[in-house]
Each structure stands twice: as C-alpha cells, then as structure tokens.
Length: 383
Image 1: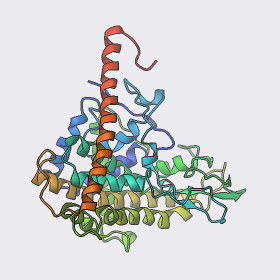
Image 2: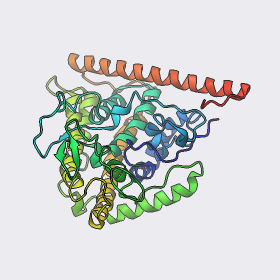
Image 3: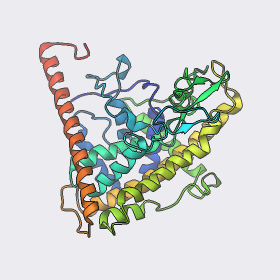
Image 4: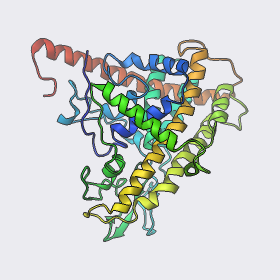
C-alpha cells in the first residue's frame, strides 16, 4: 500500500491543504450519515493508491496531490501530472487600467477552466452510471468549489504601475507579485494560506489534524450561519435544484442542462470576483511587508469564503448523494424525456469523461507497477 504525505504544495495551488479540508469539512457537516457513507464508499475506490486521501474531507486535496512534483511531495511515487492544471483556475481579466489585453483573454469561461470543470463534472455526476466517473468528479468538485472561492484563483490581473508591477500578459493571479510575509513569497501564495492563518498540511497522522479541522469548521459555521449578513445576497439555498432537475429530466430543447448548471457555477465565480478581487489588489505594494489591516481582512474574508464554499459544496453533495442513494452509480439511470440535443450533449460529455478516466486509470496502473518494480529491485522510484 502506498503511503501518501504532503508538505507545502506548489504556489499555484489554491487554499493550501488546511483551507481545502476546511471547506470539505464544512460541507461534510451538511450531509446526513447516509449521504456521507455513500460518498465515502465511492471515494474509497482510490484508497489503494491514495489511502489517506479517500474520504470527503481528505479527498479535497487529491487534485493538488496528483500534480505535485519535487522532494516536498513526500510520496513514494511523484505523480507530477499537469494535464489538469487549468481546471483549478478562472482566468477572468481584472484590468483596472484598461490595458490592451492579449487575444483570447476574455474567453476564460471556456474549457479548460474551473467554471467548465464544475459544470461538466456536475453534469457527469448526474448522467453517468460509472463508479469511476463518480469517484473522479466528486474529488474534483470537492477541490474546485474551494478554488473558485479564493479571489486570486478567480482572476488574472493586468497592471502597468510601480505599486504592483508591469503585467501586460497577466500576473497569473498574483503569482508574479512578490511580497514579504512569514509564510509566502508572493501574493497568490499569501492568499492560499488565508493570510498565513491556515497553514496546517495534510499528514498520515490525520486523526489529530481531523480533530482540529472539525473544531475549527464548527466554530466558523457558528460564527457565520447561512443567515449571516456576510452572505446577504450571496448565498442562495437550493440554487442547484433547477440545474439538477433539468439534468435528470431532460426537459425541453430550450432548457439545456449545461446552460442551466453553468449559470449557477458562474454566479459563484462572479461572486468571488466581485467581492474579493479588487480589494485583494488594494493596499499592498510589491516587495513590501503586508500591512496589518490588509492581513486582518484577508483572514476574515478567507474564513467567510471557507464557510460559503462549504455551504455551497454541501448542497451540491446532497444532490449527488440523493441520486446515488436511490440508485447506486452502477444501476440504471432513472428514466426521463431527453431531447435529441440533450442526448447528444450527454454522449459527448460521457465520452470526455471516459477518455479522462482511461487516462487516469492507465497512469495509476503504471504508478503501481513502478512501485512494485522498485520494491523488488531496490530502485528509488523518485530517480
């Protein structure tokens, strides 16, 4: 059995381990025991290769684990899989100086993007009967829903000034803006750590971390209930229901599941952009220490985003589990009146999911073989 351990993740990852597991823990608390058990049973299918990243909370870091590279990964085999890197980001231009943008910059909603990943993944969970597809896309949604609530994963900044720098081709969500802080050397990484406030990483000794996560998440949920003024006009209960019903029932040709679902996920991305991006770039200067008032706001806003993401993710998982609880991923899909266009789209989506699943399955098989050969021959699999 492989033993998977994480240290500090790449600076391009959103919310470090602590933040991603906080979001997932808050979502977990929204589920019934039946819903939680079913989803965890699906996630366990990857437990041979990822034994400690195969439940609702720990699987939230899996999409970062598979792209991890370097000695800090602490895995027996470093996956170093970057084919999915673009799934973590929405590169929506933030262009306060009205600079001329590179061609294609405004096409950020298209594939690949976090928005497209959420939409396609959710549709796959409502239409596919493949257990592998369910496992794969539940893991991605556990992660990417958290990603899109981090402001600097929801934008690419374009600047031409001395305070932030000169970025005619984007700052890559703050990755190119150096700052001075105890935990990070660029603005993006500073936000990933929620202002150096959530820096606990995953470890094989998960029980102690899990207790801390549960306590922290419970405290934040109590501080920011769904009716909190911080979420006024932002959080909408059951907002995915129309999307889910359109997906299951097919509906009329004018109501396409992809479009209905995309509207909801776009609203989440847009909410983060509107409430966090402008201020994230205000009050800081490149290559300078973070001001105290800015640091306090980053921590406060990040905690609010953890909770908001957890509530939204919890509602999403409730829907996924409700279909799965009624009929397992291997059972026939409930009947519905699908239009020809909806059928064609579903077929194309499933073909994409199958191709991705086949690719990942092949990589996992090679991964196991490499470990087995290394153990037999005494070869270091990292070399």
